[in-house]
Length: 371
Image (tube, rainbow, N blue to C red; front, side, top):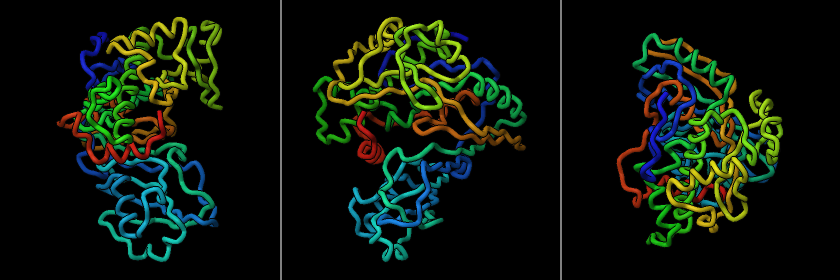
């Protein structure tokens, strides 16, 4: 496998991000129909049946979560902050998820109507549903125009189950045209004319994400994906505990067994940069765009694990390709797994300019935790 060249811009492209496996790819076409991409939210908890908040389990097709929340607010007379969601689901898919509303909205709920949106279940709970209150998502994806390739998908998935999946931020994080990081860099330099705080946060998060992706790509290029370096901040997959790696050789067997993985830094004022060997690699990722950790002092910051493991993976051969189903933990992008399977530019960015952040980008920015 050839090593991709260093990135030359701030735009998102899969070509800058090394894949994990050398196994044969299936090719194929995704999302020919909305039903080809199905996402079912796996909740962190189920509503108890009692409480001041109304919980709705909804199925939608052709709507972003943000658009659905706006319609609920308009039709039921609710403020945006009154409505809760655990995650943001795609427009070009059939998705199910839980939402929460103030209990007073129940008497008006029978009047709510939106094409291709169905309320599957209604319950009650004591608290409002918050962003991130989910275990993950279950995906069922049809890959078309790939007849006879189900065996290739099986081969690749066996490798991914053993080694894990690169936890890249997918193109969804980079907005319209995949160029939001360019405007995010202007925000960091004080050159942007945008004044909306939520949009500015979203654009800077695109820069954070781009640097994380580069850090992860460097680990893959140098055979460090499943191992650890001195100075890494490693995360335990079972408990979520994070610790600094002092003895990389001693800790690496646990990493190779899939018990712990390295994390990358989403830079901000409350997150310390990596040190030692891991710190050198991290600075190399920053240097690709002449950035320093101090540039992100306006953000809180966080850590993101470099690999994820899919659960309950199945491949079903189809006449024109195959269907793959799998579960991923929250914060992970299905595009990373699908790119490894198909070898195509899955969900590549659409045409557009960075400055013209779409409404869905703005809605995402409002809903995201500060990074």
